[in-house]
Image 1 (spheres, helix red, strand yellow):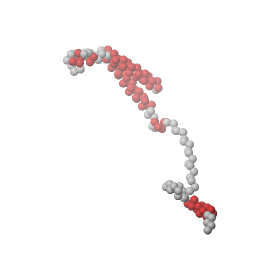
Image 2 (cartoon, helix red, strand yellow):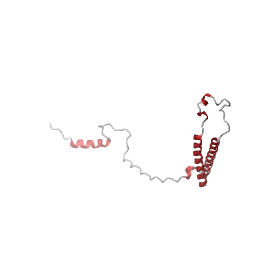
Image 3 (cartoon, helix red, strand yellow):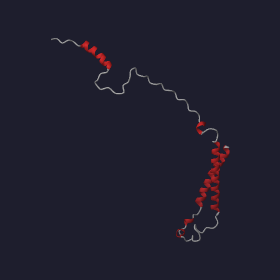
Image 4 (cartoon, rainbow, N blue to C red):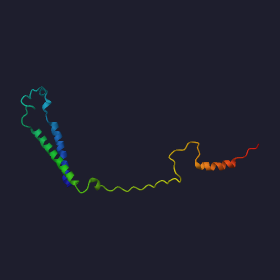
Length: 141
């Protein structure tokens, strides 16, 4: 199956290159200066052209080969992926992520509202009377 897909790809690339070369070699209808004024195009809508020459026939053959090869590649590409399940199911399972330990919770409740600068908390208020009473010395009269 892979050989047929590779062969089809080679045919498509070669036909595209041949088509490019053939189109560049052809002489366009509007290349003459007189063609822009209608000098040779009085007989028909697109100009007086006879039977197609070798270059235009070769270009048509190369274009047909290109489109057939494109359709074959689309068919073979779709047929290779038509197995059971989708594309995501065919992928390898990702490696498990190591779990991160949760941070330790603080002992007391955390207040959402920040404290006022200079204000004391309950713990410092409880310790404040003991220190102020011990350090307080009665004033001498």
